[in-house]
Image (tube, rainbow, N blue to C red; front, top):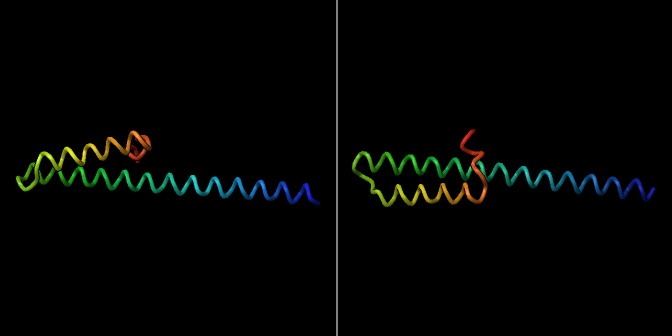
Length: 77
């Protein structure tokens, strides 16, 4: 009986770990998408004369930082 419970506990722990990883992945995807949206808005504002090159550069740096930390998979979704 103890062996069964140990295996069940291990399986439950693996499920929890996988679930947390999936949540982290989804949050990173959303953050990346938000950063791309900010970059697009900064670029458009700059092109229309109401934004600055500095704001566009900051938004680009934020996207590049996110890619360095989380990868670029959010660019394909």
